Amino acid sequence: MNLPDLKQPTVAGPTVWILSSGELHEGGTIIGVYLDRDLARGAFVREAQALDARFGIDDARQDDDGALHLEGGCDWIALEPHPVVVAHELTG
Image (cartoon, rainbow, N blue to C red; front, side, top):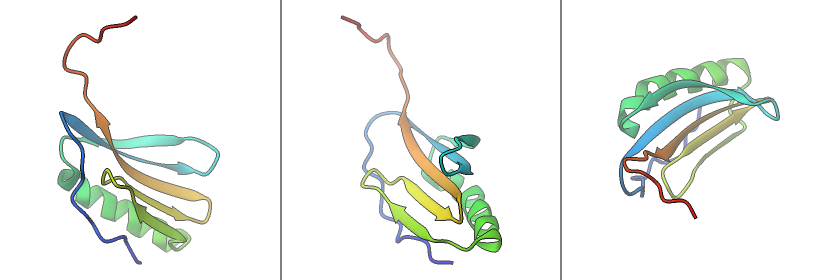
């Protein structure tokens, strides 16, 4: 199983990391929400190993913000940063 080289994420402000999986073009399910990308490491690796055992890994990549994406067969796994709203948002 080849995973992308892990670079330090470049996200600013309060952020949660959402680990999700699903089938291509079918939506997905949230597996966990983490305060730090490193806290999701164990769950991400377990999901990646399960995907690899089922289909193999066809694509593995990391975005500039540190998000991780794996695809195998028609399934995918993603660990992505999402900003946390900590104040009232002004609307126009």
